[in-house]
Image 1 (tube, helix red, strand yellow):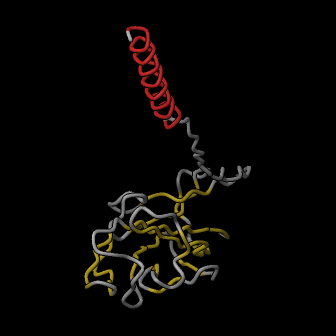
Image 2 (cartoon, one colour):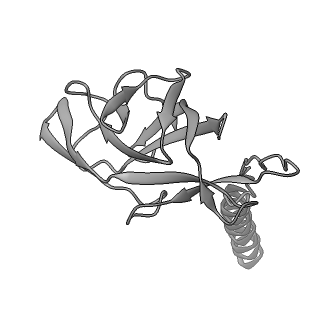
Image 3 (cartoon, rainbow, N blue to C red):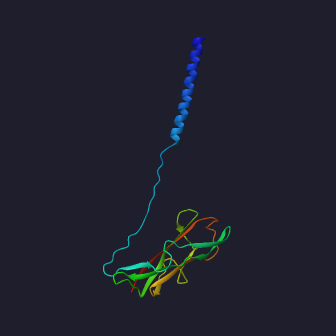
Length: 178
């Protein structure tokens, strides 16, 4: 009987040891290494010998710090106010002389809401230049050296939700400066 009991205790210890090892191994395999890819993209402006035109901030608010205020109810929000972001075109090769005239166009209008990816605005938001709606890839002839930009909603939009942080990004191309 003593031998049988010893054999039974040894088997119970072996089963307990196997059960514990299996669960420890399961816990270890659940903590796997994971990989994420992160990417930043930018464009370096071409260096043109001679005239050195540059877009500068001529307003009070930094070009990357504009704000928007929304109003509305679930599924129908509108921008009721936005910061006015001003820019001026100057010739840095000529004592920062302001341009007399230039052409500009809105090359891209994108937004992100609620932490999502940036996506084309598709008419949900509008950028105005000196009070006139800008249309993507449509040239605007400007006399003078300064433009005031704002963002609006042409109609109530459902692409944002209550509590969302919203980012609206406009890219402006300037050329034909004189």
